[in-house]
Image (cartoon, rainbow, N blue to C red; front, side, top):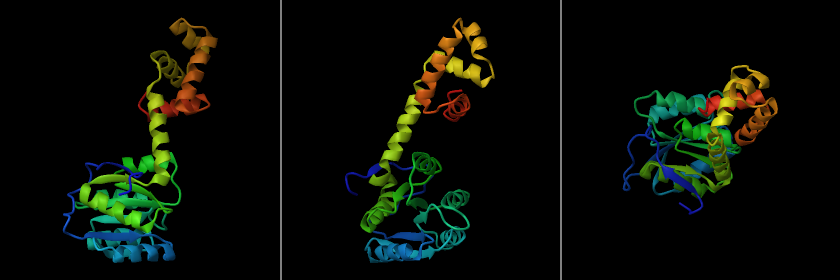
Length: 229
């Protein structure tokens, strides 16, 4: 793999690795015929990869994976029928599921984080070179790696920073957020904490900045999402 790829330890959800002397079996799922054809060609030409099936939508992709039991499923995130997330969720219910690599032309921080959290072995940009995609397939199959292509790394880092900043809320900021979540007014929160309403508001706005939100409802929702409340 090229040095600017983000590679980490594999998920515990994944099954055993593929031996170095064995070909990695791959199923491709993508609804764009020309792009799917180029992926097919790249995989078929690679000496360490074996294309065992391809599909034009999510339902077909799920059927192909269950029929051919590949080591890696290379799936477009947005497909007709079942999307990539739905295929991944269905495969996780099976006794033997492959590693799943998502491909997407879009990669915001929440989507990349959701994919990795759901058990995907990687998230690749459709701008990646075909040779890079093949190397990513090998990395997840043989070395149990988690791979994110360079084009999407900033999204991952932004998410990590966002979560880290949320976890740095002070004890006072958490107390005030808890009061807001309980529906208390600034005056009621201030009376309980021996603070003026203006000071309560100042602490709350500091929490907004750390959570990356701009209003009370969003702050409470983000705090619950991140386990702060």
